[in-house]
Image (cartoon, rainbow, N blue to C red; front, side):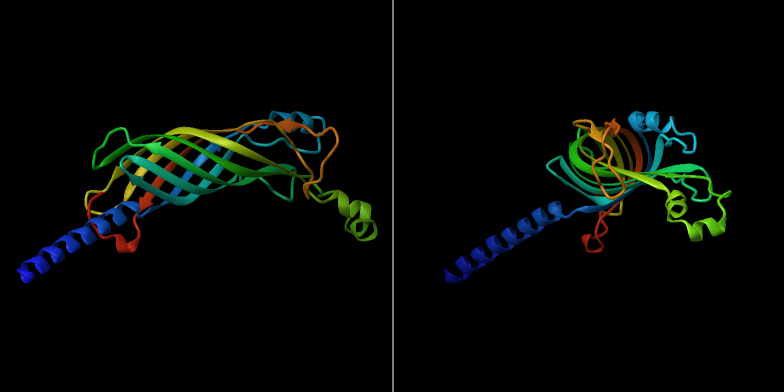
Amino acid sequence: MKAWVFAAALLISGTSMAQKKKNWDNYLPMTTIGLGVGFQEFDGLNSRIANFPQYRDLRDYTGVLQLGWMKERNRVISMSNITLGSSMSGDRNRQSSTTRFAGIGFDFGYDLLKQDRVMLYPIAGIGYDWYQAKFYRDNSNVNFDDVLQSPIVQTGISPVAFNNSFFNYKLGMGLNLFAPKEKGASVGLQAAYIGSFQDREWRGKSNQDLANAPEDRLGRFQISLVLTKAPMWYGKKGR
């Protein structure tokens, strides 16, 4: 009798451990990497720059790199990303401008299809972005000796930079196609609109407040190719 009780207790214990392990698997995140392009116009800053012909206005697109993770449980999807972007247009040797930004975001979605190999989900989230706009002048006609002799000339050949930051919301859609044999491995697309809650004034290079500074609102449309991969210890099974 004691042996049967012990065996039953052992079976229940083993079943409980297996169930816990399965639940833990559901919580393991997939690492993500995204490559894409974002479209953003800063009309306030560009309109002010247009009054100064020695500077060139900002481009309205940036390359975007995303690094983060994604988890799904009971069709609810949670995501977190670090995002880096650059217009890759600045050249310090000629008249040009460049836009750079870094951001963090926390997003949620819901799998609409409930299929093993395809995941279609709306996205909603919040985040914070830090932007820098930098403007270079053509200094090829500036005399070398003048730079050595005059602090004013030294300052004049330096690029002009302005900073801004935005607390933002994100709305979009995502689609992932999962590999049949590699656990958590997928290729997908995400398209989203990232908008700020209010206009923000541009600040100086060291974040100084400036009088009569132009204001802009974040309104970036972004599309990215997103690759996911489960951790190495996750095993090579289907999704």
